[in-house]
Image 1 (tube, rainbow over the protein chains, first blue to last red):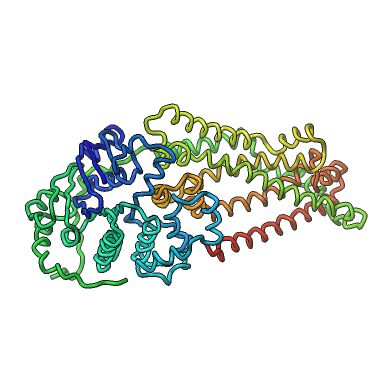
Image 2 (tube, rainbow over the protein chains, first blue to last red):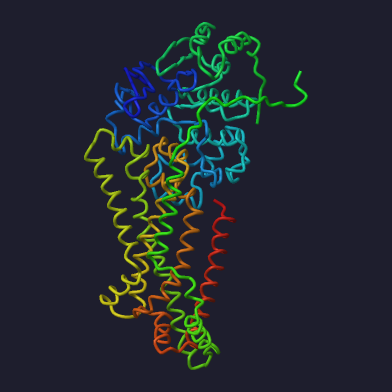
Length: 271
Length: 295
């Protein structure tokens, strides 16, 4: 699905956020990205969802060289990639239905987008998506009245309505109550299973990454440190990945990694 | 075991306090400018209280009472009052119609900067220059519209289309477009960019992003400022009557020229009521649009 060849992103000619990265992702894969803050995970994501262009290197999406895309073709490809953000990035003033349906804006002509603001077109589709994420009753509530976890679910519903081939989730649970985080990660995994979508998730929590994802990539200083099946990720890998980073000490990380077997049975959490 | 109370040991701060001279320089410059302007504008507040001044003020004020409420006079005013309101409304509509598109173009985050434009412009210098040029042009046009006083616009338009309310509408339409456009662009620059990035990532086109991402966030401020401008337009259309652009301003000018202060008082009182009415109406409109809005 994705083929990155020596992709770099440099800001202001000085700050190297992503450093000659090579990456291959197959269609339908589920992949977790972990690493300390500032490792370049979000920058990589913004290149993967075609928000910013790479400074150098080639990025192929489904065989297409995205560097060559402009205007309408670019938008068509963007439509095939869905993103869930840490800050959900919903429009607070809107009713939930409009936020959910904004996933369709890539497909709708302008007049339908305008008319939908007056009377929601395809409201049943929005309802269906909200049911999938567990909060169908919130369809006509004002988005800003929902809790953080519920708003994240609305953002996921927006992605469902968009129906992309790839779901990129950029730290989707970092702004959510930790007790609910596992529930949301599970939700995204189940949805990608059911609808056969590629899922790439950025995570701060090593536990969640190792517990739910078959493939884990460690990113540090814009480079890939390791790219392994979850079972093969060792404490040494994690220690090297987070060494010297101020987010957590290596003991904390390896200590948590030891608790992994205990955490294997996650309680079923609903919000 | 936590301590019973917090104690502070006196340690010497060994670091250097990073001070910049900017606040000091700025304050000094400000003071100098103030004093300089005071003298340059020949501000002499005491003049207001001198005998000569007091006498003239008294003559002026006394001349206003009793206000001219004769039916002959009031009969004349019905139509100009309506005209003033109509001019202000039409002028504001026109100002929004012209100011809003220009304001969009004058928003750098929409035209050439930021992630909404990065991919469009990347690697294509002519396209980048074109976008930046349209931004600069929009800003220049808005600035021009704003800088020329409504009075001068009205004067020009009276020459072009004759006397009456139409030149007043044009004058307000154009000069207020300049003000609205500039303020709109500032409001739009400062919205939360998160939802815009999210919408762009779903493949939405720029007009759609403006509609679903920018407008909902900008709407309260946009509505608020536009209604305020309408209130200003009411006062402006009264003044524009001085150049023959219709409304009660025309009558006001006549009355003042003839030193008929009783009539002036009546007219000013009517103007006051009109502005107060518009103010109340716009407050209610604002509340309706923002409070009970379902979207």
